[in-house]
Length: 138
Ligand code: AMP
Image (cartoon, rainbow, N blue to C red; front, side):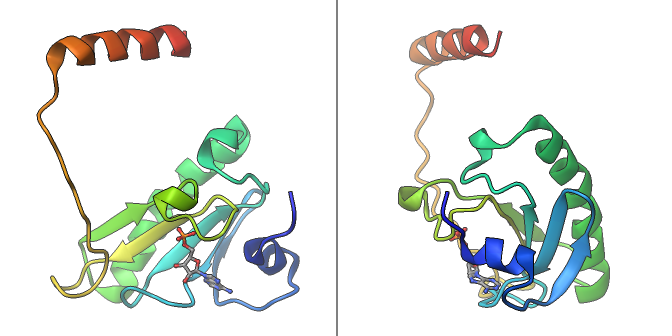
C-alpha cells in the first residue's frame, strides 16, 4: 500500500492539528471542516478500508471514538454530531487510510448533509440475506 496523506501525518512528514494519540490511534482536525470541531480519527495501522482492519486496531478505535466525541462536544458546546466512515471511492472515500469523521451538527446548514434514499425492506429477501450474513459471520 503506497503511503497516503494520513500516513505522512502519522510519520510527522506533514503537519496537522493533533487532538489525540495512543499506541494504536491518532486524531487530528480535518483540514476542510464541515463545521468547527470536525475531527478525523485514524488507526496507526495503514488499512485502506474498515473491513481490512485488525481486531486490535478496531478495538482501540472503538475505545477512543466515544472519548473524542465527548471532548468535541465539551469544547464546541455542540451536542449533536455525525460519525462517518467511508470505504471506497464510490462511497466517497478520498484518502485510502481508514478514518472516522466526527462532525458536529450546530445548525441545519452546517455539518454533514445526508442523502438517505430508503425503501421498505422486502422481508422475504431480508430473511434470506440475514441468514447468509449469519452463516458468513459464523
Ligand atoms: P474521506 O472523503 O472520508 O476520505 O475524507 C477525507 C478527509 O480528509 C476530507 O474531509 C479532507 O478534508 C481531509 N483531509 C485531507 N487532507 C488532509 C490533511 N492534510 N489534514 C487534515 N485533513 C485532511
